[in-house]
Image 1 (tube, rainbow, N blue to C red):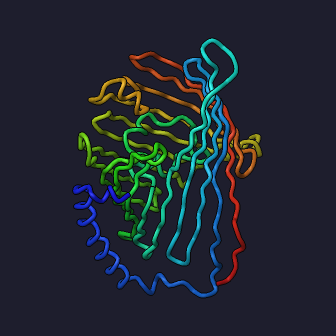
Image 2: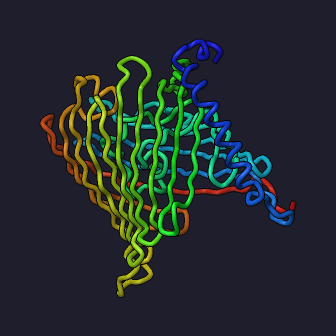
Image 3: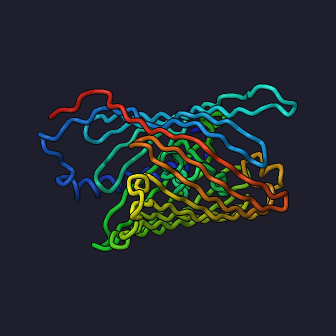
Length: 364
């Protein structure tokens, strides 16, 4: 890690960011210190092991892939102001060889994030370590297999780094009774020593406004690459949770030199139907429409990044059935249209969510 500090560009960014952090801490500590105090009779937090596990069958253009994965999340609170959190990903993707025979493949292991959070006060949290890059909303909020309504990744997901290694400031506050403002700003160091811990040298951030009355959020993201081509990426997002219907809608737009595009999806729980009510309360329908436009990189470079090699349109429809709290079965069908060829996308599977307290809670 010492070699990273020899990078003059990164050192300049950190020197510029640290005085801002110190000033922000001092101001917020003086203005909100008493409000952050906790009473002595609150329950003591305990570590928690949570996460998701699932198995899926993906059929893309007639080629079947059996996918099994487990994503454990560890949360360790340390006092009133510190939280250590981490998420790993173990995934096996297995296919038949072209000539037939048994399924085979490799199991990949990734560390999505491993970070220490210092909760300075209700308005700012400082994060150090490896964290999910706050660009758009899918990577941070919708990526886990239990949360997402459709298991296929959006076409534009690889346009920004999924994880970063460095420091981040994030928080939020009420602008007025009808609007809340949230922000995240970060600086990341380059890391190439291990495939599972890679990150680019960049800076960026995200800001958004949330309107509690209508339950609408709108926001924008920005990322500046500080190595190689030194390119910029930007994006916008929109979310809506209906107050009258069991309906939620999410959307994103992103653009960089690697390409651009958008996706819009929604999920509706059939709990308001008046027939088969027990089953309908457990049934959710979901759909997504998206489009990707190729950038200034070659098709081979795009494929290496996980992007579509040509301009692509895609639509998908899915059905989720919740067997119980923490367990659901799912299925979906999608159709992709591209100059590289049209194809069908089929998905069936099961996803499980678990939560295990690692200790006893009690009064402090």
